[in-house]
Image (cartoon, rainbow, N blue to C red; front, side, top):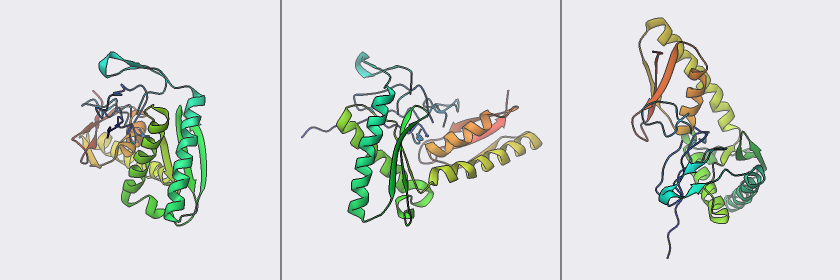
Length: 226
């Protein structure tokens, strides 16, 4: 039996844009889905992604073995979302869940949104189940296309609502940093959550953010800008 693996595309919402692809299965986190601004942020906190966490939307990354992965066109991205939607629909049928499924391309990445009632079990505590389902869906896309996907999966509007909550957390941290002049360390977050916080902090003057630690205890530190 031949084992096929794909690089993780957490780039969080997941944490994105312009990431180096490892297409020979070395599980590199270019971090999106959803998805920090982690490129995989080894200490600089600008995680260019999902997630959660994937591949750069427009740039070309050097792959293992010297091969180069070309940017994926919008038509290919929409095809990825269609494949993902079919896969998710099959999962819902197996689990006997009802939901409307929309596939689209937004911000240079394929997306699938599931809307309906009684979907909380597909999200799980702090989105843990949703992240796992997203990885399975990305794997399904990879198996059909041979291309690592930065697909973003959302269920019941969880990611949209979580972004709003994290924006408030980020703004509160910034206020404390500006008031006391001391770094603020936030709770451990997923790649998707870190990306949301980085985006808010980086849009404000006088402060900066970076990620520290390793999964699953990776967290953001907000501090005065140098």
